[in-house]
Image (cartoon, rainbow, N blue to C red):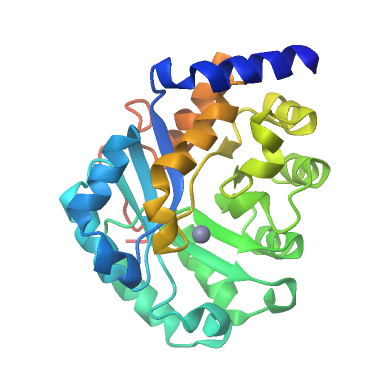
Length: 283
Ligand SMILES: [Zn+2]
């Protein structure tokens, strides 16, 4: 622990001189409010300034994200949001118009995932939720879920092979709990966006999280989560915070968390890139 504390301090002191590790931001939002302040070019500029090689981004409504994606299709992974306006966030599990909307959007062929779905345990039996899971499985797209552990259990009951990204390490981000879910569900990945304070209180990586990353190096991804425009304003600071705790891990694991795991999930590295890209496997 003391040794790691010392290393952490060194990283803090010299972080400005370190070469930036390529980073895949796996949890971003670009919505109507953000678009009023930041046009797509400005977003790309922010990503460039923080040496972000790739970004998985969702948006409400999807039209602004679509413009951003078409500006830089080689580095933006567009995640199809299920909310068309800000009130949908609390009512989508009962919205029967959602599935036809998603089916129509998916036909564009460029979506790289579906989400972020905010869902409580009490809503896990929703028909709309199970239809979205079926849709994601059919299109072989990862689902980004912000939800309770029982939601993850229900999802894997319906679709055991579905790729899922559990946003923010779940609603109860305790290393023991996260570890048991990773053991139970091999297609579950974790994004640790917004958990920097837990992972590295005062900038020094916590022992339990360190062990968790070492035990499951191929299951974690990092992200800033620009849930508000203020967060976009603070983007470079948020990225620096992530880079600081990442740099306290062994090099090989840094590469996996910072880039490799997300690249594999979104099939973008040369090794995993499919010739035909994303397609509906039922057609
Ligand atoms: Zn989010």
